[in-house]
Image (cartoon, rainbow, N blue to C red; front, side, top):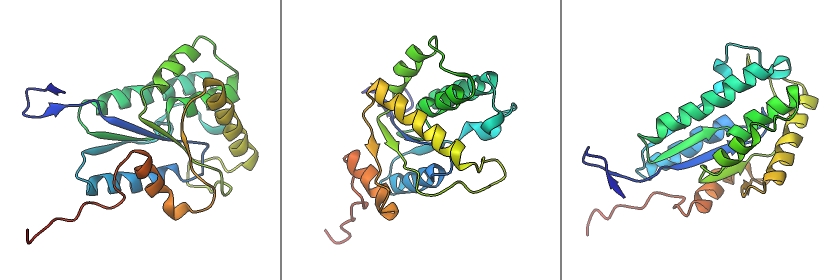
Length: 197
């Protein structure tokens, strides 16, 4: 534990990433988990999905340059928030972004040591299963083949890198946030204050 000079002890923040293909509910889960963590009196912020802000083509029209922008912007946002919060909840990890690059342009052996190293900075990876086809939201690609293709690449990369993760069950969507909290050894409900003790 280090003193930051701002009256607050500094601990490396917990960094939780929801990973998986598009259209599986990662963004909703990020907000639900952040709300649960705030109820536990933790300082929390989100690394929102950076692909939506990419100035280059995404989805099936993406390019190597676009995916490089997305991957490196993700890393920069994670670094930025790590200095200020107890917990960072990430809508994707660098592995997801790399999976879209692999789909578009093939493997990049020169990037893979960095991907492997950066994946070790997450406290918990949470793999979200495909339970429904993607719906159009103004950005998201609605091709089921594309959705499932990305999911297969993510699973392949997770296996090759032997990355530990929490795999959410396809059934029981309402209990997913509780499973994440239990995996972090955090209470599912905030402790009750004793008003009369």
